[in-house]
Length: 106
Image (cartoon, rainbow, N blue to C red; front, side, top):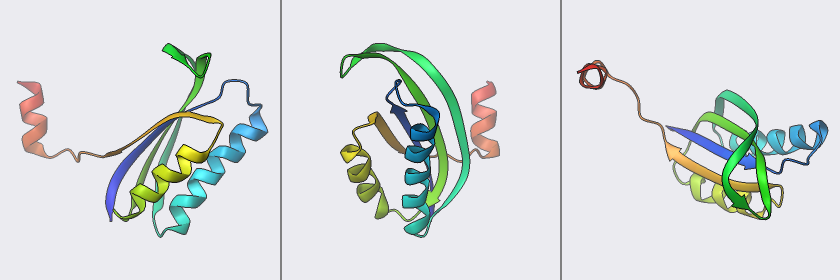
């Protein structure tokens, strides 16, 4: 399994229970596919750079996860079908090695 970062923006008008339900649903998709959630980082409600579906704010979430590579397409499809998710991005997490850390400091 590979490490991924799943970032998504949820509709700002969702109450706390509906937001928690969306977050739990995404986490359950990952665990049901045989992956595991390493960390969930809730950034809260932030102003977006531009309007998305007539919204200027959104609730930002970043999930660090390990999951099978073939599941990424299925996760993206599921996120696309969620009306409460305004935008999402699934990226491969870059693991830091001593060589890359040394290059970043120079």
